[in-house]
Amino acid sequence: MSSLNSMPRQRSAWAAALLALCSFASQAALHPGEVAPDIQLQASLNGKAYAYRLKTALQSGPVVVYFYPSAYTNGCNIQAHTFATQLDQFHKAGATVLGVSLDSIARLNEFSADPDYCAGRLSVASDVNGVVARAYDLQVREAQAHRKDSRGQEIDHGFAERTTFVITPDGRIAATLGGLTPTENVAKALQAVQQLASKAP
Image (tube, rainbow, N blue to C red; front, top):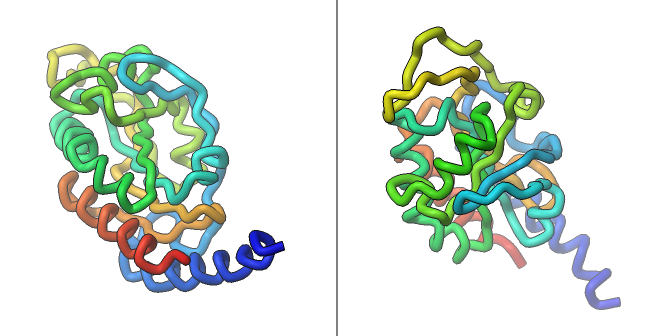
């Protein structure tokens, strides 16, 4: 009975925290307060692919889902490295982090294990056709011929705009972060989950 009685209080606490974070929202994409579409994708952690589901991850606490254009490109390399080096602070605030791009799982297996970027710590998911990115109302650009990554390899996939969503355990968006540099994006996401943690019961 005690756990059941605590559920309405917990939901109201998340709702209050969500309203407090609305100032972080960008003009594009889904907005704070909206229900976050579920994510079911193949993801990679430390070079190994696995099945990821957002609803399952939310059972453990808030989730930061960040969409980025492509693995092994300058801004995305910086963002992945920054998330990876600060991941303990996200975990301390009770949050997990998932990167999502249109890269193939083969590319992400390399990226997730790369010691300079995800460093075997950060999970990244493959949204090959951009279905999930579009569900979050993000712009998806088609692949550009002859464009190469930071390793000199050709990029054969489309690009989702760089946007981060902080999602509360009840499946609602608490913050939408766009139009920021890669490092600013990570800093704002951390600030958002720390605010959620401070308001959680």
